[in-house]
Image 1 (cartoon, chains in turn orange, purple):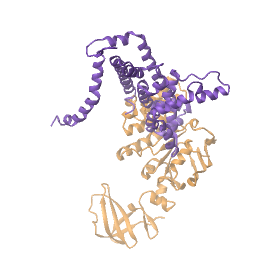
Image 2 (image 1 turned 90 degrees about the vertical axis):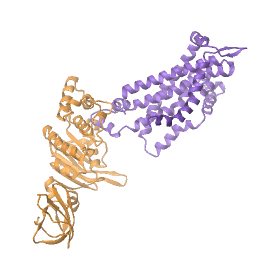
Image 3 (image 1 turned 90 degrees about the horizontal axis):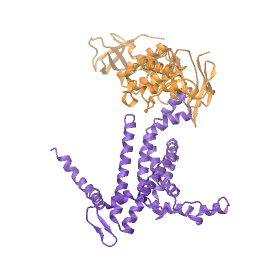
Image 4 (image 1 turned 60 degrees about the vertical axis):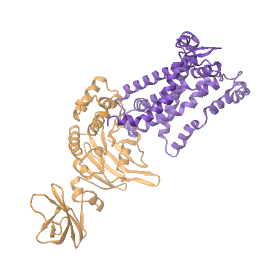
Length: 308
Length: 283
């Protein structure tokens, strides 16, 4: 029996089906991502777990208990919203303390746990600031501390990093992963960013049109995509004569599929090539080793390892 | 050139000075002039009018009534207007648009017509509501409404409520709907969400609405004139009477200047309070 079990969960809004018969078992301590394009039903799924949206059919069980019978305020889940949803009229400390106050934790213990939580996210020095006085990344940390301090049974993250710039997002990914490992809270992340999902998760649930197309570890989903949608959503892919080949698996060689370089783009750590071949346009990614590479208009031969 | 911005602002400044500052200054000067039944206004510098207003308890009572009414109107507008604005902000279109129009509707009708409407409903034993209630045997004597402070407060709340609703509504527009969900997820019940999360964020809107409503209620003329008549005067109707009936312009000017000064002090003070209390949090 899984720690958190979604059983044939569906949600219909009028004639539209947002989530269509989703079943998923999450183990205790696991970090799992709901990954898909906007409108795939991932956020609706999260909101059903949180209790803000009522499922049309299906069941959600947490540690065997029927979660749908529990009011949202009593579910004991930690949620980080996309907008962070901090209380603007409260300081960082007051924001983090709010959940403990609701639980009736005594003031002394509350103060200690709030300080610990702010320390955990590296914001000890900003405790007295209002959200307005914090940067996006700092607000994000406050939201995380606020969700973690109540020692939630599950941590729900709704696109928590999408409002941060690329560099900060990468830093926060690493930090988020470390914090999750430290506290060991079962975590469900909703994201449309496949790199983020793969970087953070033990398993990913690739969703499309309300259905789970594949539930697997990031490596497995990338190497053995169950459907064409999964293959195309998890990074670039080529379909050469009906076989899916990742662009970084294709190399230039003395003999092989004949082609002409249409464009090449330098991206720092790698080169991105578009090659015209008899089997159509093929995308090739080659690591930048400092060596000279074929130029635009050059005739090349492409080879790749056949994989199951 | 350094003086260019000032030169550019000059035409507007001149207009402002001509239509606001100069008449206001003339009114202030007027307060020091003498007046007699037969000699009219004498352009001298005396403190008679000020002394009269400050020594006669009639004026104190009248100012007290003015600000008591304004305070009650503000209070009731907040108590009814703030929840109304919250409900409005929670409505979906097209209902939100329809009800916004319903709330703003009163602003489209003349204050005089609206106040006379109240008078028709509650005015003496001939008022429709009073008549109906008496015929049903629910009351023996007509409900007092005309020439009462209650009547003025009711009619003014009706007139000024839209300003409160709009002000609170504007504040609630900035409220992230997820914030309430965040509080619920942390274990807060509906009452706690309202008291700890929604109300503090609506507060700047309530306070700025209160300043507007208070200022308009304290300086309102048409409604107190119709409901209170000359039996129950407030500052504005008194100033009107002194100017146009008694023709004692200097005394009327004192009342008008005092009302203005009191309002400016109250409004600026309230603004300071809001700035200090909420400046750091909302901006």
